[in-house]
Image (cartoon, rainbow, N blue to C red; front, side, top):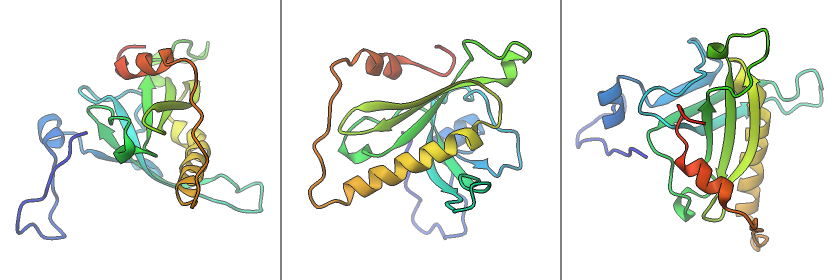
Length: 183
């Protein structure tokens, strides 16, 4: 991940740009919902994923409103975080070209989404959505909020449960070698 330190004397109101932002012209931070810009269905060139940084959904007894997305933000990543203790709980979204777009829709307006969580020093796939349009943040937000909340709850336990490992790491190797343009 491209990390940067603000220079000495930088004030709270100063806008800082990472080297990725300077090089690409694309701000690292992105508001996914509510958005006043088109929602991406592909990663910009030189970026691989979006690190989800904040999700706020309606948690209400009114079933018509439960799960409504109030706010969702992320940060573009040029590289995926190393799945280690420092990044435990990081939740990323990778936007892939759709493998099977809806029959009546333009493939350029649809996306396959893969969501992964750093959990116990490895990537764990927690969701796949195929052939969705630019409303994808609203589709995945309830799942992402639940995963982030549960992961935080587990980390706050005095005696957290032991992690369960899968027998196959084939999908993890495939995920780590993936880029937005490849599938």
